[in-house]
Length: 358
Image 1: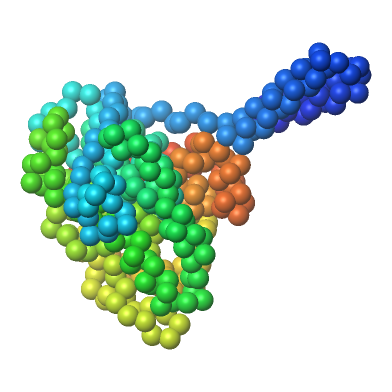
Image 2: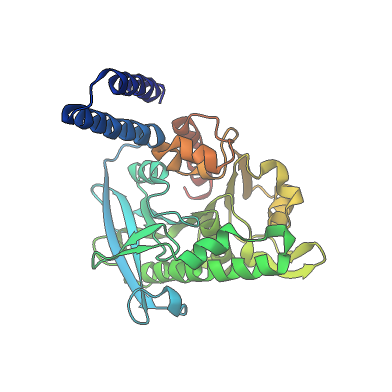
C-alpha cells in the first residue's frame, strides 16, 4: 500500500506541474484528461489493492466450482423465480475426491457478504481434505449470480433495516429483526443439509461426503443462523465454527433491559471466534448475553477465542480486498496485517477441528 501512496503523490505532482506549464491546447486537454484517469486508477488501487491470499498449507491441490439448489420458500419476497428460491453455492474441494471420505464444512456469510467472503479459510480446509460449501443468500448477499446468469443484489429494505437497527435501544424490535433475518438463512442451510443427508446433492460431490463429520459455520448473521440450526439439529452436525455472532435461536424472552436465553447447554462442540469489536463488551450487550454466559463456562467443548488487532469485518477476506475500507467500516480496529490475522483464524479453526472432528 505504501508503494501506491507514493505513486499517487508523485502523479498528483505531475498533474499539477502539467496544468501549470502547458499552454491551452488540445494536447494539453488530452494529457490532463489522461493524467486524471491515471490518478483515479491510482486512488482505486490504493483503496482496493487486492492483497495476495495466504497459500493453503495442506497437501492437496484445491479446485473450485459453483452449484445451485432450488426449493419452495416460505419467504416469497426473497424468492428468485416464482415461489422458488435458488441458492448459489461456492464449492471448494481437494482433487482426487474419494467416496465417503471427506468432512463437510457448510458456511453462511454475514449481512451484505458473499459466498467467497472467507476463501482463505475455505482453500486451507479444502487442501486438508475438507469439502466446503459456502452459500450465497440471494437478497441478503451483496451480489449473487443465479444459474441463469442473472445478478441479484442486496435487497434495499434489508440493507436499510440492518444499518438502522436500534440494537439495545429497542430490544423487542431488535429481537424481531434478528428472527426475520436469520429465518431465510436457516431455510437455506436446512436445504443444503437435507440434500446432503438424503443423498440428493448433485454429483460428483454428494457421495464423497463423510456424513458423520459435518461442520456448520458462519460469520455474524450467518453465524447466528448456524447456531440456531446447531441447536435444532444436533444429531446431524458434528461441531460448529462461528465468527462473532449472537445466539438468536437461544433467545426465548425479554425481561426489562435484557433477553432471556435457553439455559440448556449448547448441544455440540463450538468454536466461537471474536474480534476487538465485541470481545471486551460481551457482558454489556443484551444481544450477546448467551455469549457472555458461555464464555464463563468450564465446558471444554465450547471454545471462545479472541483475535486481537482486528474488527468484525477483519474476520473476513474483505481485509485482503480493501484494508482501507475494512478499517473504516470497523472503526479503525484493524491494525494487524490482513494475512497474519486470517492465518491466525485458520490456525484456531484447524486446531479445533483436529480435536472435535478428527
